[in-house]
Amino acid sequence: MTENILKGRVHSIQSLGAVDGPGVRFVVFMQGCPLHCGCCHNPDTWDFPGGEEFSAEEIVKKAERYKEYFGAEGGITVSGGEPLLQAEFVRKLFSLCKEKGINTCLDTSGCILNEQVKKLLSVTDHVLLDIKYTSSEQYENFVGCDYGKVLGFLDYLDNAKIPTTLRQVIIPTLNNTSDNILRLKEIAKAHKAVDKIELLPFKKLCRMKYDKMGIDFPFKNIPEPSALEIKELEALLD
Image (cartoon, rainbow, N blue to C red; front, side, top):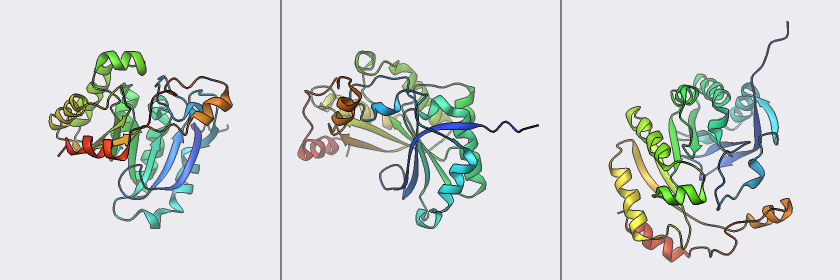
């Protein structure tokens, strides 16, 4: 009888990433996402049938080649798309990584919390949680996800004591306000598992992907924030 090997759909792999969690990371971008974020820079990850199939064993074998570069903090990060759509596969991948002594990090929107996701989190060393806005209305209009679910996901991480970094893409006219940043700061203060907040500038390089795919980029007319604007907002977090 042929063994049924669990496989995951992967959009792409980055061998040495420096901005996807602690230290140097081997980054796996999963295929498929249930959201429709106006600022999404990877529209080519949305459809689940895309990408390439890999077994967890195949990915761990690739990651092990770069283990000497990880140092004390580095390891593997699984991003997306939305990796929670393939929670069973990512759990298998992270379990194998733990056996090999490779640190595990999950980059997620926190839009799903079910038993499979909870099992995945049990073998997750660090989480990068993307809190896109700090209002239910903006989540409904620009993400297509319940803001309450994201906060509930963060509560679960906090109770499980999983080190968590909050991330937010700063989008002029939508969330580049002091009120938003101060709300984000209060969310972090209320959760001991949060180690820091990272503010990321909205970029429009992705527009080429939208044009190539023949779809509209919803935020094409929104300007990118300046470095000074990001620095001024970061000062509010001190």
